[in-house]
Structures are given as C-alpha cells and as structure tokens.
Image (cartoon, rainbow, N blue to C red; front, side, top):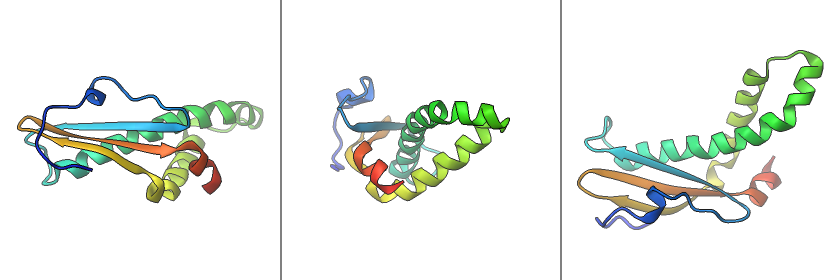
Length: 118
C-alpha cells in the first residue's frame, strides 16, 4: 500500500466490484480521534467487509434460527466475529491514501480463502 499524499482515488466514491472478493472501504476525516488515521480507516473497512459477510450468514441461518426459535442477531454477530477474526490474516490491503483532509484504506477478502478457513 502506498503512503504518498495524493488525490482521493476513485474507490472512495465507487466501491470496486470483482468476482470472488468482498471489499471494504474506510475513510476518516482529519483530524482523526486517535493517533493513527490508517488504523481507524482500516477498522472501518473491516466493519464493511463484516457487514457483507453478515448478510450472507443471516440468509443462511434464518430458516434454522426460526425453526429453533433462537435470536438471529446474537447468533449471527457471534459467528461473524469468529469468522472475521479467523480471516484477519487473509484480508489484503489494496490501497491507501492520505491527504490534508482525510485518509482512507481499501481492503479485500477473497471469498474462496474465506470459505477454506471456516
């Protein structure tokens, strides 16, 4: 990932689409609340990837959960957190930008690698 100051890349306003990947974009306005703009942006991008996985898991579990009268949200959150934690080493940093107003990071997770690890 490049650290040089440059204009905001296209992916900031137009999420990349590539078959077989989930993408996460995280941007932070400066000054950021913490010391590390890159880390805050990365955390936001991870949440975005997690939400895409959540949609898929929710759909898969909905029927099972309804049949057993369990709480879908709590079970989904637990499964997502476990799966994302297990896949953190597999999340790739695609790009990073840092200008005077904000910084951002673009991450991606291969769906095939994700499914191999669960």
